[in-house]
Image 1 (spheres, rainbow, N blue to C red):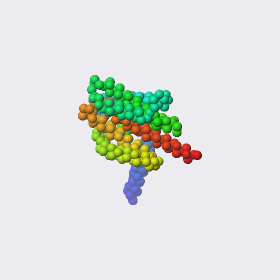
Image 2: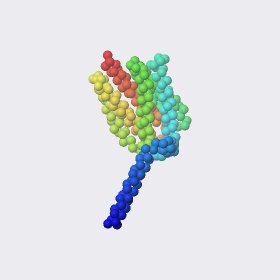
Image 3: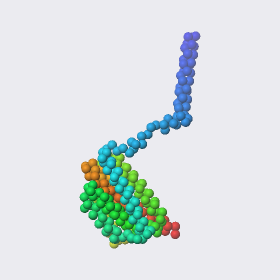
Image 4: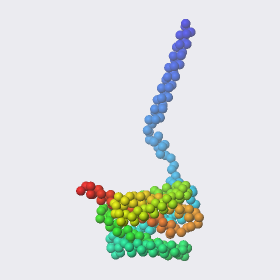
Length: 278
């Protein structure tokens, strides 16, 4: 009997010790989860982040990366020249955008296409590119007049929105696997052709709904062209085509088309809101 009592007491003491150990482990786990000390917080953020790695494109060769720098540098210059052309129409009124500016743009782009790419003709082609950008900016004048009559702040909003859209889709194309968006070419061209036919049809129909649908779908198509053209330029450069001036034209046309459509969409929405308030 005495032996049984001793064994029973030893068993109870063993269970109590195991219970205390479990409770101690639970308390230590809670302390680790609830630890919000500065040292613990710093451990999370005190990690070396290689910012340069974000701008390295391992799938693109070094020569193509230098080519892209020339393309986007020329694109930035085209933006400034186009802004000057728009300023001439909107503010100075020395020249007016319209049919003549459109024909001038077509003449400039044809001249640029017929001028071969070579070191000797580089300055000449850059001058032609500047003339094309100026006339394109001048051609935006009538659209800018319409937007200014509705709400001048739309111009800044549309430009910022276009810049964000263009940068995001460009980075998507650069970081994506090479040739992964080239399959979009046929679909985008077919959709653009269909959109052109609908635009011509709507000239006689005069449907506001169809016009708005044209703007929204056209905006989506041009975003797709940013992906396609960027990767196409990369593939051309990888295969030896280093004509950065012509490649700049392709991206410049994408940017201008997105900017124009975004301005019109925002202006029409603003007009609709004003009508509802009245």
